Image 1 (cartoon, rainbow, N blue to C red):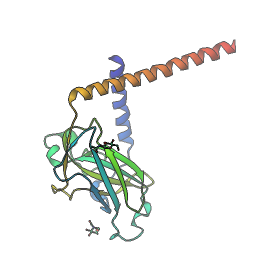
Image 2: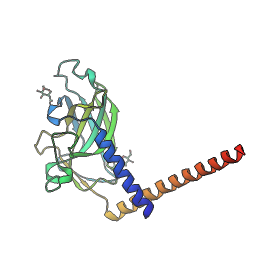
Image 3: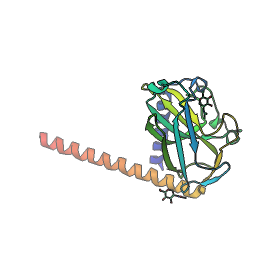
Image 4: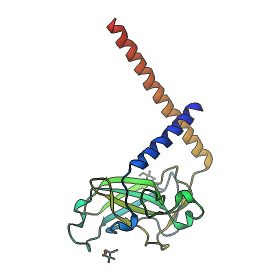
Length: 205
Ligand SMILES: *[C@@H]1O[C@H](CO)[C@@H](O)[C@H](O)[C@H]1NC(C)=O
Ligand SMILES: *[C@@H]1O[C@H](CO)[C@@H](O)[C@H](O)[C@H]1NC(C)=O
C-alpha cells in the first residue's frame, strides 16, 4: 500500500512538472486547417476496452499550399463534450491551452504528413463513461500547437458519441495490478543495482 501511494504521489509530481514545462498558446489562435472524421455514429455507445474507433484526418487544401510547412507532429485526442463537462471543473474548457482540460485522453501521436492519415484505436479500459468527440492538435518543431481539426462543428452537437466504462471493480483491480507490476520492476532494478555495486566494491579490494 505504502509503495503504491508513493508511486501515486511521484506520478502526480511528474505530471505537474511535465505540464508546467509544456509550451502553450491559446486555442483560438490555432489554424483550423485539419479535416477530421471519427467512425462512431452520432449518439453511438461504445464499450471501453472493446470498441474500436477509426479516426481519419487530412490537411484542408483550401488553405494556401505551404501553410503546413511548419507542421511536425499530430496528437489525436478524445475530448469531453460540453454535456460531460457540466459541473466538472476538472474537465473545463479554457482558451489557454495549458489550462484546457477538454481533451484528456491521447489516442495517438504521429509525425504529420500532408496526405490523409488514419488510426484505429480500441477505446482504452480506463476511459470513463461520458460523451466525447475527437480532436487532433498539430505541433511545430518547438512542440507548440499551431493547428487543429475536430470531429464536431464548434459547439454543435453533431458527431458526439458515448463511452460506457467497464465496471469500477475491474478498473481498480487493473490499477492495483499495474501498481504491483511497477513496484516489482522497481524493486528488481534496485536489487540488481545493489548486487552490482557489491560486486564492484569486492573487485576493488
Ligand atoms: C477491435 O479491434 C481489435 C484489434 O484489431 C479486435 O480484436 C476486436 O475484435 C475489435 N473489436 C470490435 C468490437 O470490433
Ligand atoms: C476548409 O477551409 C476553408 C477555409 O478556411 C473553409 O471555408 C472550409 O469550410 C474548409 N473545408 C471544410 C470541409 O471544412
